[in-house]
Image (cartoon, rainbow, N blue to C red; front, side, top):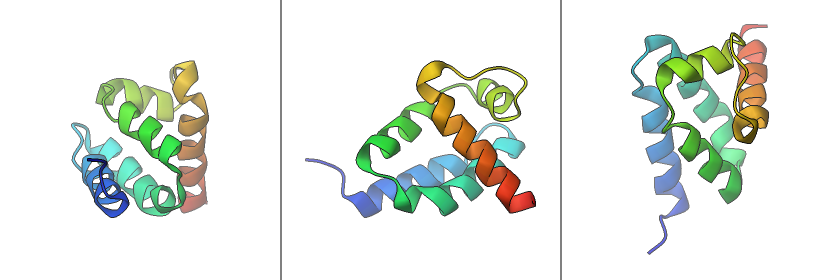
Length: 88
């Protein structure tokens, strides 16, 4: 049985807040709150997959220290953009 959209959003928001690195907790929880409600199923699936990646790698991608894998590049760019909006 497919996951109900509301439950999926809540699960992804919780996974965004409960990371291994505090900086990623802050970055991803803000991103999830701002962007996930507008995402389509494909976007949510990609975000869910990205959350399975190592937190240290995620931090390096989001901070621009390392290039994100191609499949996540648009998503990571959006995360960076949302971060800049929030602090701009």
